[in-house]
Length: 127
Image (cartoon, rainbow, N blue to C red):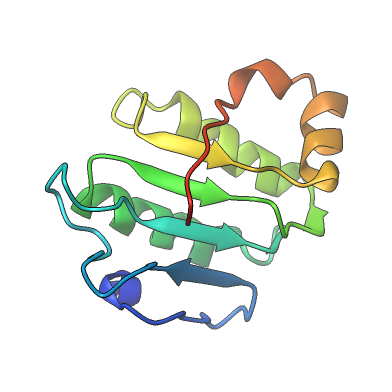
């Protein structure tokens, strides 16, 4: 989605996903290493949200060397959502560029139940 470059919180058609920039100097999707990487906040990732969220993540990855996925507000994550995150995380073109920040207990539980906990790198990012 082209609205990744916005400095303001953007609620997409699902009403569940937002991108954030902390300061006006933080340009979403900037390829420069001195800019803060984009942060995509996912509150709900079920089969209904997979396509728009995948599009948003792919666009952010096309525009930035690293993208943080914030799951701290994730209240609902189903197997389709976990599969999407797993596919993106295992994609050779994405390796090391997609970072999961502060997963909620819900997200941790789903990853654990599916045996995926060790796959998801967790770093701290003030997004």
